[in-house]
Length: 387
Image (cartoon, rainbow, N blue to C red):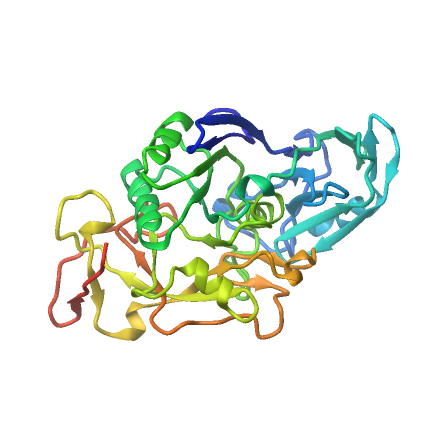
């Protein structure tokens, strides 16, 4: 679907349209140097190895919010850590060698290049015998300043689903800006995604970016953190925060099959801003794949399991206020279901606020969630989901 690491930012209020790039760099496929999975001596199924990202060094390289330092965000290095410690970074055109400081987490690494000359247009990185040129991309936080920003990563989700997901959150949660990263969809083109989102009344800004890089399978041999190798999705969360989102009112992360519900209270952005430490945590409720209408989107589904243990979605979601000072620390990493190194006690639930998680809005790419079911009054009940 289009070129890798390139996108389009549209200001729907003014009609302005501009190209946006992410500076993705990868190891040469012919090189013997590759990222290896954790515990590489353990045997993995072919599905995992076929989906693992052996080569990406960074997904993006950009000026920080103050246009003083340069940040590079990529997968955690595993066995490549010694190579990163020996890597040489030079600012171009000055040729000045730049000191690098690496911040590691389970899945993501951020590299801070400090005091980069203001005329720098690219970073030349010498890494494991290879030379890589990374154009330094502009910081986009001003583009989303004071916006209610929602973002997601999507692949081949039905355009009807995407449109309703976006329209619902504009209407119900006052979303004003959306960033959608496309993970290599082959069912439509980028222009189709752009048209789908720009046709929504009330939306002010839309950024759609093509990021067709590996989305790794679950690492079944690990009992703790088997999703550690979801490099792309989790790294994009740091990129959204630090390149685009630091000036937003708040940032909401939801998948296309998830709808935030605040039960008539303030929207989730206001609740995040009002929270003591800038995090609104949301529990989920599973909605079963029992279609009772023919809209072709989330509105077809309203049935949940009576048993709360079955209807409860244990993987929560969040909205954050990025303006809090502790988010400036580069050791803070947003993950899908938590914020790594968050402020102490920085997870707050609000009574009645949750998200609906629709099993029927799914391409079955990971699990066969969307397989249709029959309503059983013994185990199911209908909920009044306000669409």
